[in-house]
Each structure stands twice: as structure tokens, then as C-alpha cells.
Length: 168
Image 1 (tube, rainbow, N blue to C red):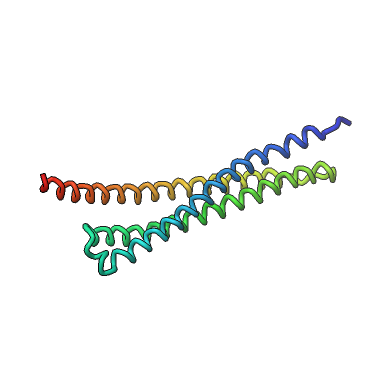
Image 2 (cartoon, rainbow, N blue to C red):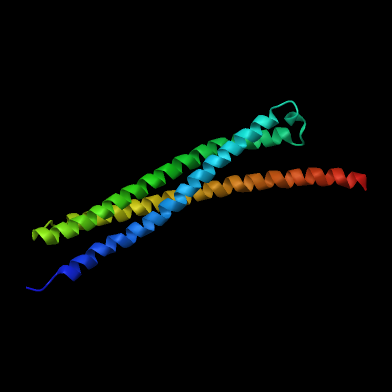
């Protein structure tokens, strides 16, 4: 009987490639969660300034407060999407690790586990794909809030440009 060890090890490595991809996505998503949290804190601090006595006198303070109030629900939605994406990717990692374990156990025990390793691998890949799709929605929401902030800054720039045009 031929030694199946190289074939079994090769089969066990295939899920590891997907695990590596999931790990990369998890690291970048974790950083996005941190940035989203930092942004929420920045907006909260800025809002506190804008509602203060001196803050109300700032140019376009009312418009900026309105923009912040529109962005807060989006930030909450982004955080929710990021948590869902990370959950899907952690599930993917667990399923893909289980796939490798089942492939190894199948060989070591000399019994057939049937299609269980294949089912685990498909579920793991599907969970990874789900996480990536959720990240797509979160990225579009992030881009939307960035565009809105840029529009506000253009308006603020025009306000200040108008002030300086009067001086000349």
C-alpha cells in the first residue's frame, strides 16, 4: 500500500491558504474597527465644542452639527457591519481549521468521514465570502461619509474664501 502522507498533508494545507486570507482580512478589519471608534470619539468631541457658547459662533457651526448628526447613525451601522464581518471571518477560520483536522483524522483513523471535510470546507469558504461581502457594504458606507465631510469642507473653504475676497 502506498504512503498517503504527502497527499493527506497536501489536502490539509489547502484550507490553510484560506485561513491565511481570512487572517489578513481580520487584521485589516480590526484596524477599521479602531478607526471607526476613533472617528466616533472625534465627532463626539467636535460636537461638544460646537454646542458650547464659543462653538456656536464658529462659521457654519449649525451645518457642521447637522452633518455630525447624520454621520452618527452611519458610524453605528459601520460598526455593526464590521462586527458581523469579523464574526463571519472567525467562523470561517474555525470551519477551515476543522476541515484540516477532519482530513488528518480521516487519514490517521483509516476510516471514512464521508463528505464531512468537504462540507466544512465549503461552509468555511462561504463564511469567508460572506465576511468579504459585508466589508464591501461597510467600505461603501465609509466612502459616503467621507464624501459628505468633503462637501462640508468645500463649503467651509468657500465661506473663508468669501471673507478674504472682501478684504482685497
